[in-house]
Image 1: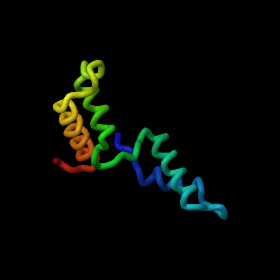
Image 2: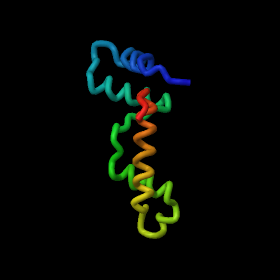
Image 3: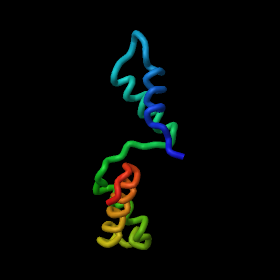
Image 4: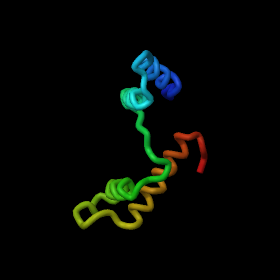
Length: 92
């Protein structure tokens, strides 16, 4: 089931609407609402830390030998990009 992000944002806006409205307050409410719906905001391109952690996950023994191999990092980076592309409705 695909979450309705527009509806989530509208509920967040309703939660902070009123005389004390602030954009930072809305941003916090929006992030909290997305988090409660099981969603996260992530960068389109993976960070070095994400690549390293993903590489360690796919190249498990490397965790005990000083970190993921280059091939583990490449696999993790490609996997991340494929997931982001699929989430955005793009085929890459």
